Length: 244
Length: 257
Image (cartoon, rainbow over all chains, first blue to last red; front, side, top):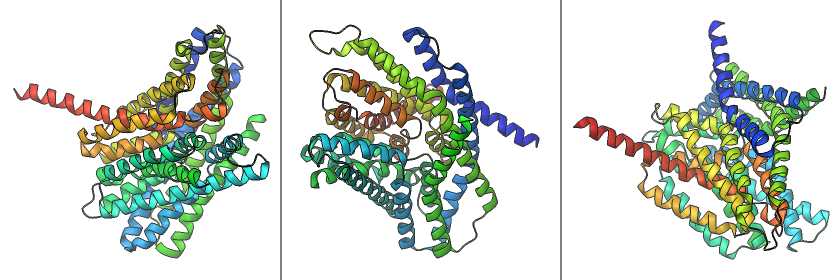
């Protein structure tokens, strides 16, 4: 029990340290620059308690649950020895975690409004929601492809930087030909796909794969899955903008 | 009472987000792997912690930080407009906005749970050679730089691709000079910065700024901050690693003598 308490206290101390910059920044701008009394101080304090407790519990959960789970799956697939099953799993994981992502849904709706304003689609609710839905599917598909590509890279030991730099060149080239209104949406879509639960799971999966395969180095080959997941959505959304 | 309702709603939403992941795991476990997961009870407990922790975290943000953040963005951008200029928008009318953007970008990134996860993993895998704190600060400096530049872009109305493509060029040059072990981690750090804290903060900032600067449309110019926040951390992490190894080289040269 004493040990658990120490862990708990340490997690809470860490969480306080993580949140401190936000509190300092807001307090500074509020008192020095804006010079207005703090609105609803009690509510803010209660909210901050929730944030600190939540972060402490989350980090403990990462160590107990998400990291071991990602690694256990990686080991299980390696000992099973079926690359096809692993790649199918990678695609489902990427697609499944992205398709329902709330920030992606928000961006999709905003993008539909931009497209309607620019006259790329008809300005009515049906056309907008169809556009937003297709955009979401395109991004989810792209993340599925990204995780497949990333896992394939780990299996084969391809150097990451060539693939990523190739992707950058492709994004740059496509930007020249894509319609203006899709560019901002496409560039932002790379960042919104990686949610707080997907990132630890996918990272642990990559590191687990690289450490259970012979000849792969977890540092060199284990990381990189997230990098693909933030690059391919840009390429797919730019392509979608060019086609539609 | 209101807080309890919000907790329940967020808990439901978070569980709903996790449902596809659990479903995929479940199907592959039953159909393909058919192998007992070691420490299953502990993992389940961890999963519950993750859900509970994330729910509390998001409710707290929603309750405490996002409302102030939005009010502050409004007040800061409106303050800049207090002195309207006949000659149009000048980029240096918004210096406090850039300062605020950089500060809040830094602070939000330090609190980002998915970055904490990747930094812990990196420290673990590298055997402590890459410190979790150093990595997180390097990423946060990158986000701060990126977001400040992104606000400058919104104010000046210059095209987004110029900045992003230029940043890519810098990343490519750095890649050929950096040590091989840091490259995958640096590329990953671009994607992890933008999750539950940073995306809502940046969206409010971008939309608020684009709405208040004359001649900018929130719909067209409000996008792009997330893109800035995903590219610049790659530059700072690669730079940080180069700096650390340069310092180590100088030190070992000194002690070698």
